Image (tube, rainbow, N blue to C red):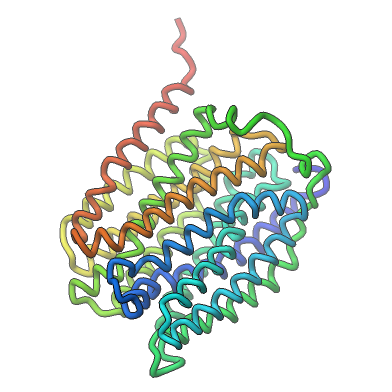
Length: 399
């Protein structure tokens, strides 16, 4: 363990960060289930139905670098507190947008929640702070396992609260997220992560341009970009695709619930699998699972097809995202972590924003099958890159 934090405190932090992860992902899962449907109701141009979600992810990208550098100066807890305050404000503005029937105001609300989400993405890196190398993969994995809370509560909360402020549908769900963000704000006050050292606040180390040429960095970022972006590409429009195929909102909420569960439930085991089989092999498994998901999505449009496809996407995302994050920690030194983590999340959530923005328009114009076919070459490139790094790392055969 790093000086200043013991094993017991490290594990306590992971528990609190996992709870915080679950609370912030409740908001994300609610928006997965409802944002595109709200956008469809409010937007005059139906090709813009996923614009609110895209703007949210764009803000995650834009905020990633300043959020990481700010926490380098003031510490994790104060940074996460600021993020939760943006979550409260964003949920309030989004609620007002739905109540007033304002697409612009709804977009603004999701932009503000994007700031919250950007800070929240660093929970996984905060779990690593003070952890020994052997504990890192499990610390990341267990923190993300908090998303199981969102899988259980998020879609159910969306269904129970969507008519709270009737006759305006869905406004109640966003109003409920104000309270969820308040609870997260309270929980975050109990984490105890050492303040950055003077050396960490100064930063330094190798130039980012040099680190970015490291094959480990390249493959870690590529896997996370394609895994997260591809997941967002499919997931964002799933409720729209299901409604277009005459399935009810309750069925869409059920599919999203299982999808989020599949994203995070494997986290209880992913860290252990990485320790046993190696991070690259788990990432390879993630790409293969994603490929299987695309095959299922192309095989039919019953609720069972949507369910199975989104479950496979969720597990594939888990392996690629946790694997990519674990691999990334091998690419930097402590003095370099803020800028490397910032660059990683900037690129990852830039891809998520682009995928969320284009998925609605592509689905509106070309349909569900074409949407899935677009991802096939990206998964092939990612698989090839991981296999290349795996072969590069193999020790030479004995003469």
